[in-house]
Image (cartoon, rainbow, N blue to C red):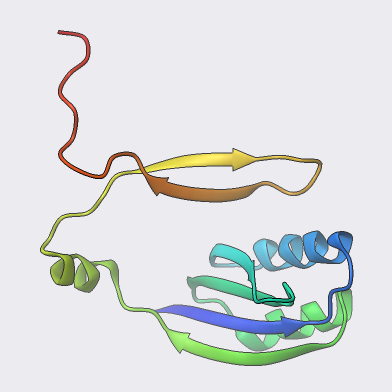
Amino acid sequence: MKQKIVMKVQMNCQKCRSKALEIAASAAGVNYVAIEGNDEDRVVVIGDGVDPISLINLMRKKVGHTDVVTVEEVKPDAEKKEEKGGVSEPTQWIYHDNHHPRFIIYKPIYETDPPGCSIM
């Protein structure tokens, strides 16, 4: 079962944010980690079999005061594909490394029909 965990973490500087992301990404079963919110104080974790209690205790121990905002189940990909009509968009993975942990950002490669073969 995929879960989405949103935590409000006390982070005052970029070093604290990167440390919080690194700790959240190191937890077992995590597939996606991001920072959201206007003040960039919310850590979003999505994954299979992630234990929210141990993750929150680890964040409190290593980073600082942490509150749980939401813990909810994420729909499986099969149901999302049915809602879109069974077509999934290909993605392009971009890795950013600015002396911080690597963050994965994805975006669609193309908006309309796939391009033909460029070799022929």
